[in-house]
Amino acid sequence: MSKKPSKEASRETFTLTDNRSGKSYELPVLKGTMGPDVVDVRKFYADTKCFTFDPGYTSTGSCESKITFIDGEKGVLLYRGYPIDVLAEQSDFTEVCYLLLYGELPSPEQKQKFETGVSFHTMLHEQLNYFFRGFRRDSHPMAVMVGVVGALSAFYHDSTDITDPKHRMVASYRLIAKMPTIAAMAHKYTIGQPFVYPRNDLNYAENFLYMMFSNPCEEFVVNPVLAKALDRILILHADHEQNASTSTVRLAGSSGANPFACIAAGIASLWGPAHGGANEAVLNMLTEIGDVKNIPDFVKRAKDKNDPFRLMGFGHRVYKNFDPRARVLEKTCHEVLDSLGIKDEPLLDIAVELERIALEDDYFISKKLYPNVDFYSGIIFKAMGIPTSLFTVLFAVARTVGWVAQWNEMIEDPSQKIGRPRQMFMGATERKYTPLHKRGRAVSS
Image (cartoon, rainbow, N blue to C red; front, side, top):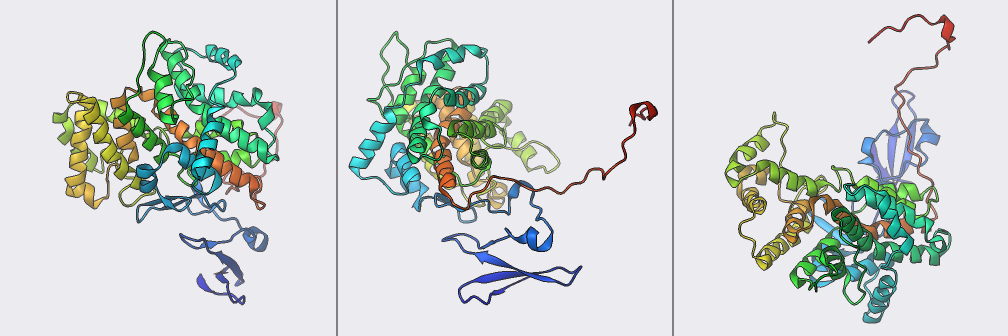
């Protein structure tokens, strides 16, 4: 296989030689504005009668996108070209929502209009309140989220025409606006408290904390440090390129499914412990460790390649360097702990000591097992009093804007086709059918 310029002056191709037949095939090389070159295999099957084989699609580009760029080797994450740490420090979540949806940072007038448009949709259709009663009180909040978000398409028929740009944008606003309301209601339902309606005089993060923790019996004042911390977490989780849940949203959307169904599919994918459940797994790990004095034994187990135990919240599949989102949350985490005056919380004591070890221990440094965004967000959520079962729900609230931005981009892409991955079949070849009365006794395996 060789890479060489094609006959066209400004293009390159990959030349593939089939050693079976001696034939050669030239595949166009496409260049993005950043990142690796891409070999275009769209005509590969037609030319060669072979499929490419890529389980998990880890070496396959499924689409063009202008939204998010990641360089895992260098620890870079950009939203529409803006570094994630700059946005987290200097922007707020609704501004980042506007950026992801429209491609540019808003002017003051555009930002105000956008926030007004979103706040107009924060309430749920009153009939949806009764929908929650169909769930058991001990239902996992993510199960509730999948059901309720999917049901939105039964209540908002005026924003399900995916061919209409206005319908798509109204649906996008509705999803961004209603997701915190649904999440807070799922929590309130679980603990048996009355639903708290949104307040549009509060910002996005403040409103969520208000709906989560206030009750009709007393006045609730949102802690500004916690609101800012939550706002940063929402920004850091807003989009992350073509991950499993985003790819699920795009795949569901490629069939023409309505946006509410597509986002519900994304939530279902996010629920998996290998994806959105990682910060929940961090808290479960801290609980398993139990006490600071047990940390050396667990660190020893983590270093033993024959031991299945793994320290959750360290390292990242994409980032081979420090997770740029974790750098922001490291500072935020300590701000939250200081603001709340938490000094005698065993799980947080364990987390702080694990963080110290990971940043100083030669094994962790050599393996680049730095604390990642899930490690810090789990600690912050725990300190804020958010139940562990709601961690992934908060992830879904943040990621909704990325999902709808990616979904809109896919719908508007003229090269978009219904997703149809291929397979390498390893089953039985064609067999002759034997009537039931002629079959002998089954042989147990």
